Length: 130
Image 1: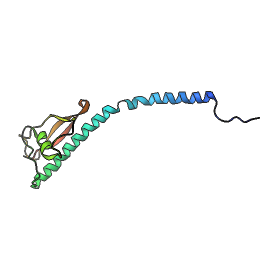
Image 2: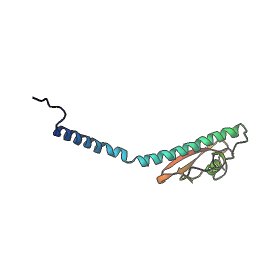
Image 3: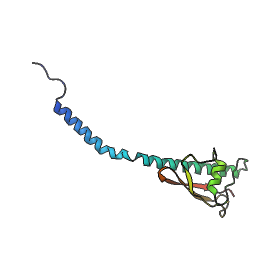
Image 4: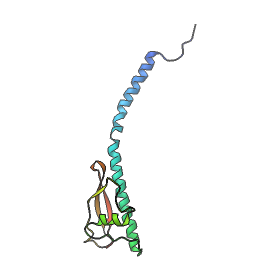
């Protein structure tokens, strides 16, 4: 007599059904990755603006010639155009709420809101240089 090798058709169908159920259960976790990626992108840009503000403030504190004055009612725009490489935010990102460094003294922090893809927003901290 010949010995049976391999799987029966029923066993293969049961395995395929189980894999289908697992895939249907896991799929919703991966559906909204685009929204999360857009939010992460905006938060990354906000982080780079905050970092540029810190570096710019340090340059001003030591009296460096590369210091950009961050004063007045559009502190965020002044920082971006003066201190960031390229003088602009990446394409698709805008400052929607700018901060006023006219009242606070040098070294004070103000917040600006940056909007990106899918109207995702993040807050960046700008240090006034006065």
